[in-house]
Each structure stands twice: as structure tokens, then as C-alpha cells.
Amino acid sequence: MILDTESTGLYDGEIVDIAIINHLGKMLLNMLIKPSIVLPPEVTEIHGISEVMVADAPTFHEVYPTDAALKDKRVLIYNSAFDIKILNYCCRLHTLPILKLAERADCLMEWVAQWAGNWSYYHSYYRYVPLNGGHRALLRLHGYF
Image (cartoon, rainbow, N blue to C red; front, side):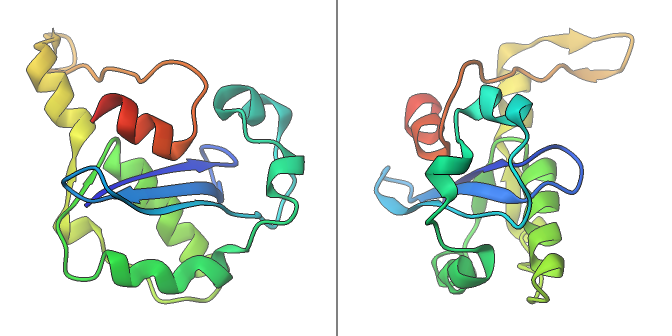
């Protein structure tokens, strides 16, 4: 499975968009999610998701049972540390069990950094390659993977 999310921000951000595709590129989940906070305008500029778009969307609590799509599966995530942090935050916010993805997730951002070979001697690791442009989670999955 390949997963991507968009959120309300970097710190204590809530998921506003989630997409999951399988290894063949078949969409398993593609959904906007209504956060409990107002979407900051600077975040809307990044991913293009507005308050109007999420106004009638389900909440994370309503979407959570879709975890069955991820159960016992290896999950590939671009910037897995960030998406797992945001997913866990949303689980805690809605008093839901943590998804425990960390032990079965691989970070595609690290793979791409190694493939690109952009080594930082200063930091002693491969530099991450950002995915540019406004995007929704599913478009990013299909556009880059």
C-alpha cells in the first residue's frame, strides 16, 4: 500500500486529505476530511484544499474505520515520519487507537534521496527531494509513484 496525506500544518496538524493506493496503482481510499480547526490560508496555498472543500467532508473519527485497508500491510509513505506523526495525532485527538504504522512503513522520501544521490557531507545523510507544486494526496501518489 502507498499512503499520502495533506494536513492543516506541520505541528499538531490534522489530516484534511488522505489517499491510499495499492501496488498496482488502484485507488483504495481518496477522501477529504473535515478538521476540527480552521484551515490556515498559508496551508491552503500549499495543497489547494480550502475550508469550502472540507465543509461537508466526514471527520477523521468517521473515516477511521478505513484502517482495514492498511491492516497487516507494508505501507510506503513519502516522508513517513511526518504522515505517521499526523495520523497518530489525529488518533489521539479523536481518542482512537493508534494505527501502529511505524513498524511496517518504509519512507519513500529516503529512497528517492538515495536514488537521487544528493549526499550532504555536512549533515552526513542524503538530502530529501521535495515534491513540488499544489497537490492533493491522490494526485501526488499517481504523479510520483
